[in-house]
Image (cartoon, rainbow, N blue to C red; front, top):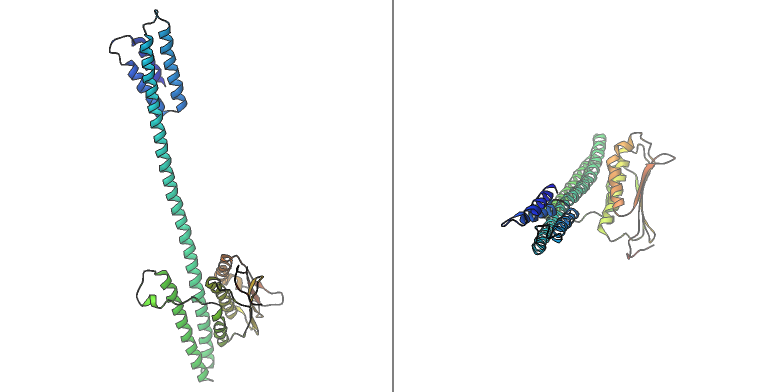
Length: 328
């Protein structure tokens, strides 16, 4: 603004001098004010400079400023101001576009990091379910086989065969998961991809734990939902509940698996009457968290904790699927 005031004063003094470029200098100063300051400063500068010229021209013959020249100079000042305001607006628009692009990039990176974290959690959850379940059953079977090897070799051999079968199933599950992750793979691994386990595989799962020495009883009522995702969640809840019972339910005489499917809700529970173990909640932390994440993914709730009369209970409730057929 100080440069504009100086050029305006010089323009007023030297206006009548032939070949004076003071009006051009004032126009350039107004352009700079419009571009680098605010529009309000540019308008005030234009009005002040134009008023000085017109007032000086109106005071003739005392003033050396001609009215016609003053009007022409004012037009030049207006044009310079408008050009400056237009450049300022375009610069602001470009800067806004750049800021928006930067913000979108940051948001995309943030969403990508969230998606990556969710994917890592899903992979960790699936790995835990596969590895923990397989190892718990294999350890229990191997321990039982070692105990009866000298007295009942035939049962020991059968138990070790069951260990091998459990290991093969765990490896198949791992290959299925890895095959899903490796979308571009077309080799043997891709051919090993199999459907995820669901409610139909629960009886085989219960039989596997029963063969490992867990006294499991299965009670199921109603028609399971058709969504394979929620079926996998139900299967994993039962699997984790039985795995924890096998690992922590000391001297358990009854382990009950209930699965009830109705138009009101889906309820799945695993309950045992084993002796309470003080460190059980800490050691089951990842499993309980994984079960809760699976259940909450479908809008359900999960409760896991000790029972009043001893034992442990895991109960998951899912809302019913809209439009799905149900059988009471």
